[in-house]
Image 1 (cartoon, protein in one colour):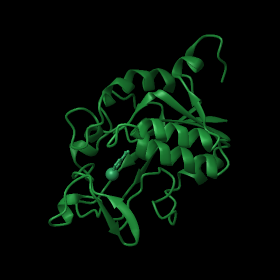
Image 2 (image 1 turned 135 degrees about the vertical axis):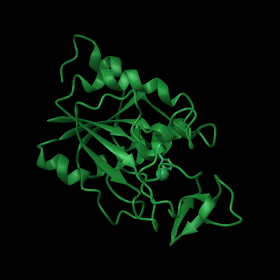
Image 3 (image 1 turned 30 degrees about the horizontal axis):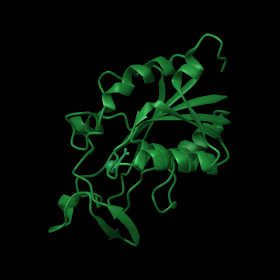
Length: 210
Ligand code: VGL
Ligand code: ZN
């Protein structure tokens, strides 16, 4: 069985949000069209407590987009984003919800970030998504969402590592590009890991069969 994984399509990652991904809202109609052709759709949700260690505001004197060591792991410091229960953490209003079978929160532990929707950045704790997908009989996953160079990339890499045949939908994802080539590099890294780089039209055209 094939599953579509929607990564962090949340208000704070859309234009106007706390950690806006350029052009992030452009993926929503594409993602909604993709949902219709998958037998199973799941979503991840960046879901941080207000005291999360990835927020620059929780490290006096530190600026956003700089690096620190957070409990032994390198950590980019972000603006406060996706705080549990806030509007910024909600899934994008334009995102169709009816076909999302389950939502997996991530980044809930203040002491460690979780870019991947499957494991925290130390690969210590699972979110349960991988186990749940396997329990549903999923063998192949298609990953898309925000942001290509962080949470989408790490979700796809972990899925491939767990043995899922893994694809990335380029046109249903957008990246932050803190450095101008970050998205390009993320795609190259996914390709090297054996992840298929797909366009939604490859699947949506009438000749394509899931
Ligand atoms: C993300 C940075 C911090 C993402 C989440 O969803 O890509 N990026 N938290
Ligand atoms: Zn986050």
